Length: 133
Image 1 (tube, rainbow, N blue to C red):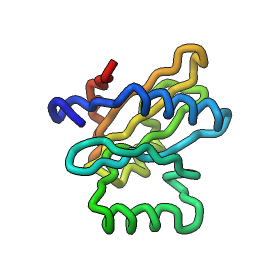
Image 2 (cartoon, rainbow, N blue to C red):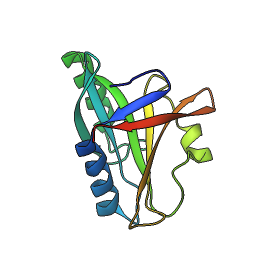
Image 3 (cartoon, rainbow, N blue to C red):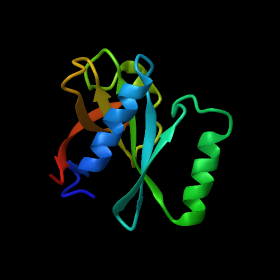
Image 4 (cartoon, rainbow, N blue to C red):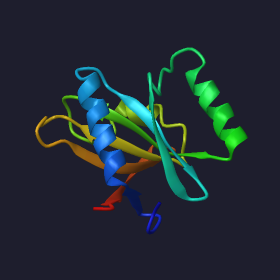
């Protein structure tokens, strides 16, 4: 899943799924999570909205991860018209310090950009995003 604490390896198929999700939801933001088990990324799950979840959606996800032994390795969302960098609102709502935050920018629709960050106590640290292709 990661080469070091300063890196995050995103499989190409998951990268493409995030971009497809962002394009489908544009001009609205999309969001979702990537689940891991035993340090391996196993599933990308689209959510209605992570910061303001549909009634019970986030709760059900947390219960499911607890019961299945999986973890939320990454939380992703899109910026349909701005760069791939955490906004003030993103930082304010970043309540999962153990997760990686992925932002997919469609600022230039033909060349989407995904960047990875850790957001802990308001501090933003960019991670090197690795791919398996």
